[in-house]
Length: 116
Image 1: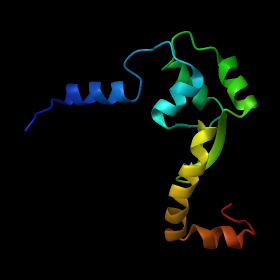
Image 2 (image 1 turned 120 degrees about the horizontal axis):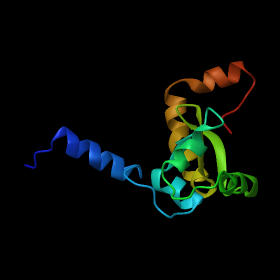
Image 3 (image 1 turned 120 degrees about the vertical axis):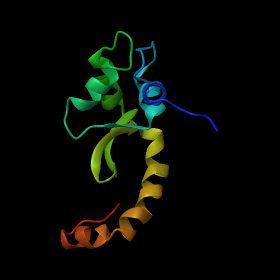
Image 4 (image 1 turned 30 degrees about the vertical axis):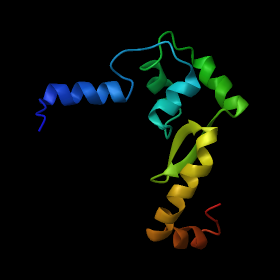
């Protein structure tokens, strides 16, 4: 069995999340590498990408959002995340049964909304 120190686990987590060092990667690839970025606060995805992308230019995320390559959606825990538009169908399908099981559909019905 492999034994891990706290420092090694922290390092591996940082690497997996793309936070061990900035790298020359595009906005869409950076978002896809972590699946989704928290976007409840407007500045959050910009800060997340600034920490991951070498020479990050905020206008690159602006353009990706305007072009629809990256979208903001309530997919996980009913909070807003920035995700690759290509990931929306499977992520929504994966989370719909969870939302239904958690009883959120009743809340949506009460508000006159649907899960779609």
